[in-house]
Image 1 (cartoon, rainbow, N blue to C red):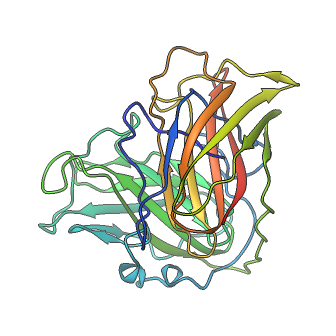
Image 2: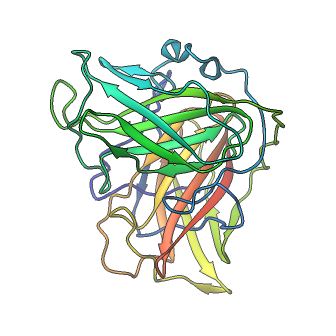
Image 3: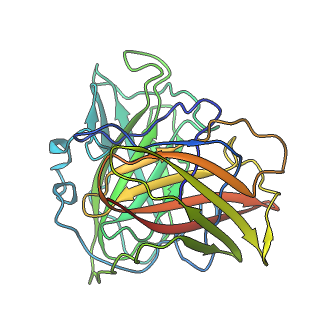
Length: 307
């Protein structure tokens, strides 16, 4: 499942590795679902981690090795900016606060951040098997320390992402995504990635995707949102858009965050959404699509295979 990008598709995606970033262009408004029955799939006030797996073999899963990753969202440094976490481990089974700062090229904590989709910082946490997704907006103290209040985590290796745009300095107006791994001690059980599918259900909403994207090629996709067999036409603005999409690549957790290009027009997004998707890497991607109806946030997860 894909979503779109904001009125200006400002943040193409922090996925560089050997190719360009994941770029999606949403022509219509809206997007669909997430299942409240899936723990850890909620945003903001309804965050909780899904039970599952253990560490992956990616270099990013080794604490302290993140700086060696390529510029694909898996590094803790980019263009002189650095993600500095206060936690190397987090407790299992209870709420925890993850604290971090972002230092600039001068080595000092950054305190000036530009708004992106109505927020100055988007923070994500996901297990190495792509379960337990959390997307929250942390609070910053005057000294530049951010605090992300995480819902209970299950044992295993987790990668945390900070997505932001400096409001001043050498990186002014540049979209950056930095990440670090943290360990949640305990007996970790791996959860297989769900098979690729063309539909996903979230709180009774059905999202249907048509299109077959190929790695490195722009490809059209169509998304239809329905409920009880009827088209949905009441998607509400969420973070200044009709939908929010985060994607992670299986195996290395490469990160992609896309924004809609069309402006919202009241509470009437949907039901048909048109996209152009350009996925730089073949393999399986786990997509988390978030949208709002009736004041309630929904999150749908879908596995997409790209040839």
